Length: 328
Image: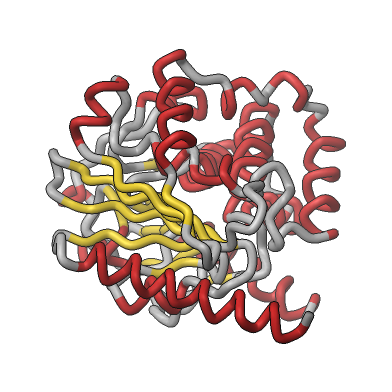
């Protein structure tokens, strides 16, 4: 397994060396792992190969400005001889900022389960806590350069996507790689946490609203539907709930919890789903979504999908609770 991984990473490095123009993308509605992985990889490639043109693209998100600036590009300038690397993207339809058909070659670096193949150099590790963990491994194993800022971004990406090393995908390897990153870069990681967890007052109040209005069933399923009116009342945007859903992981006797947010501007329902036991990505897939076994999501324009999805998740919890009771 170790030999196969080294071969995989060497193949990625060879591909990076092959192209003078490289564009790095990530998924729509990005989280810290997506932003940090793409910007860190861009900066590491530029640091290691200063003559290459390397761009990180996608819609800018003001709350993530700490990680660095994104680039604007004209794809028509390098259609025939450019490489696209997609970070933290399981499905090509979710790539943000570019048209993948404009590139000579593409591959992905991702930790989400998916059968969709991007290219011959695809590197997918479902056991990884985050895509940032994978970028750390890539840089350390191949000898690519990194500086303090790159290391800080990667650390924050791992901490965020692993929910402070609490999720089940956190492993000894996660701690080993993060430890090596800290040793190599000498970052002061204790001063980085405010960039992830410090929130304006209106978001704290909104968090209180979520707590007060969460619906919890006898089967251990919790959900809340967040309307545009509620978002406006608390002065938060449609991306805010997704950044808070992991905060609700410690509710006793709740196995699955879901936030349904209607994004009025894009006319889409964004559904964030988390689990402490039942497998949820299979249910999410039935409604066009996906993700990990215990952390998934759905985006749908169809209002009728929402009650059907909530009913399906309720049933998942009912079966899970029955299985637990049978064992006990």
